[in-house]
Image (cartoon, rainbow, N blue to C red):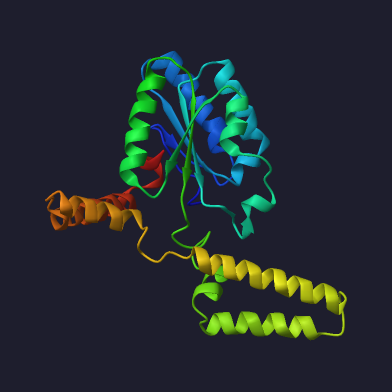
Length: 250
């Protein structure tokens, strides 16, 4: 599937299993330490995945073995449709520090801040000072998945949103099931959730692409040329992917 990608040539892999990037990153880091001294591994995951046991084990082992590993936690406060704060106790950087990890926090919506932090952290790892936990706070640019129904219902009451709310209303008034008080409480919780999603919706002002383009324009950079080059590069990548046979991919 599209979530299970691996490139031997680029030493890159992904998995649909929540939190699996941690142990995969540790494996890449161990291989880097043994076979390619001076190189490092990077593992990306969300704050919801940080509650997975395999990630906690990764943090422990990475410090114990002093692995050249950069753990990047992208914290957008949502675990699919659940507020992460309602299922996560404590502070994630503090949790990482408890394992002995060096931690650093950045604004995940500021590409320059992320780049500068990553640059000096990667240099630190390359010098043999052990793994690092980078906590990047950000917001979701869209729903958890393509066409997230919750987000569309909260941000634009389209025909689908109307159908969804109509179905919820009918279910609330049906004579079977939970008590009327229980249903009312569930509806209130749902409306609160939709309100939070709407409040977190992207307004364009904090879009990393917009922020970067504005900064580059102020610095006199020819951004249209960069956009054209990126579009051509992506078109070439897609064309190559479509022409690659399964045998060539392996």
